Length: 62
Image (cartoon, rainbow, N blue to C red; front, side, top):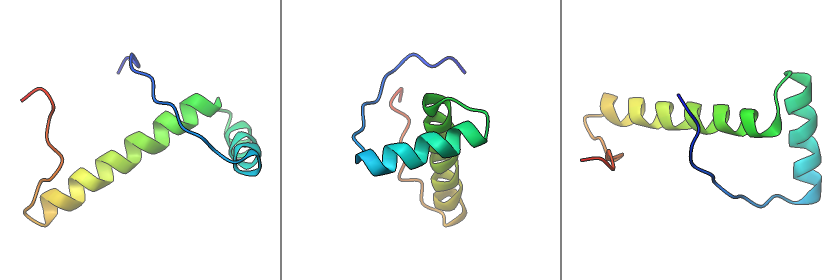
């Protein structure tokens, strides 16, 4: 999946340092790690809502 949108977040200096270190340990850039974690979160939420019979996450394309 092509990454074509940008999301800006703010972290404390301490959290950025920790996140950067974890990303390096996993052989990923900070951006790749963030994209991976966000994607995992969205999939988990969609699955959870689907399993409960509710799908609150709407497709913006319709």
